[in-house]
Length: 117
Length: 113
Image (tube, rainbow over the protein chains, first blue to last red):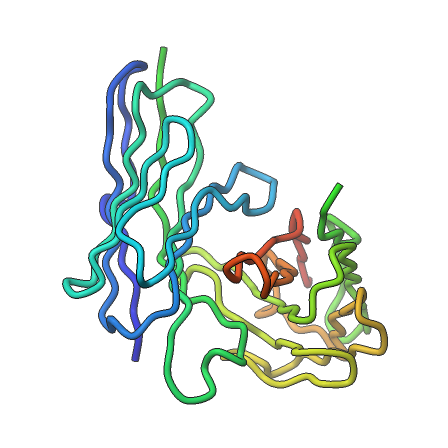
């Protein structure tokens, strides 16, 4: 059974720091991994999606890496800003059998990030 | 603008009173899903749909119903809500042609008293 874990559960950093959020998954049979941002009272915004054949994806100050064999992904945020404060979720789309057709993502419980001025 | 729209955003109801949460997407996606989010448990899939008239259970389907009569709409129905269905609900749709990115609505916060 696929499980997704995110460490740390919460993180508080001063503005300007570079930081790394971690995501691990137990089964390497995945189609892709997606990082989301969730703001209080709002929905999930997709930040980056990495296909299983890719090693990393970049968008602005964000860089996500994927090591499928070890079951790990990291989200790197450069020069953090107070506006980056949110909960960050990673999710995998599992592979195998009919699982692709279930449209199901397996989510971690998130890392709550606070960036203070 | 590409979006997934849920209504209502907030809902307080009483045990046993039937309710429907609507979901609509304007991206012509085939796949749609409903999730619930609970503290410490993360997001869990309730139901999903691969296309019109094709729906199936996710991980936590008990107490819920769905329908997919049109491609753009995927309502979630609680026939007899109970307090353990108090949660934050998200509708999502998936773009198969863009690397399977899943797009989410803004969420519906439901309280069942």
